[in-house]
Length: 243
Image 1 (spheres, one colour):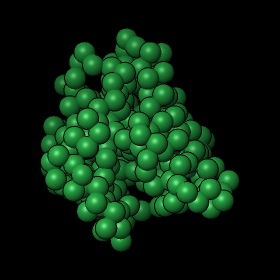
Image 2: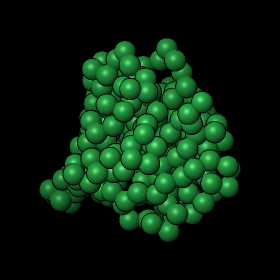
Image 3: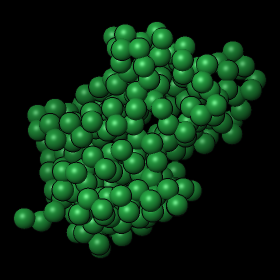
Image 4: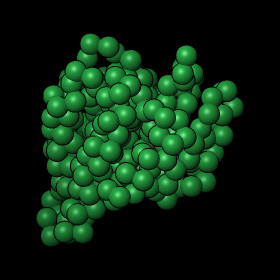
């Protein structure tokens, strides 16, 4: 049996790393995409290989369509298939929602290019391979896209758009490809480093009384990738905070 392959954008750290290891434990080969964190991506790939499965590290900025298409071509040359695409790459800046003048066009442009267009670039490039494999796509969105809260107004808007794109893709890629999203709340990654008060406040308002770990999110990503009759769903992973 040919080994299945998972492509994970932003796969070197945080949620992406946890997803890479989760799929590797299932016996899948893993492609770890990164844009800047090469050392982290290589370290994650080493952990994947230690689990007895192949790993490939590829640099591509998901905001650049040509880079994304080249990345998918490299994956197909190496493995001849893509069974799971996890659109995890994302970006944000902390801009207080009340600071309307502080939310510049530069903030809007970058967050939209990565969180919305980047997701679409990857989905479009990988769609033929996913269709051939009758595979799955899981997009890492955010509860910010459901609530309008989050690190900035632009970030929340980008995640709301990513949720809409997820639902649209679930329709147009069916029946061959299932497309779902996970919407984490606060997750203990490097994004929240230095924001301890913010993390503690949000965790205290959560029924489960803690922030999520990357592994908590990866568990749901993995479940959705394997759920044969689920598509178009957005699953919150927020400890019940926004139930």
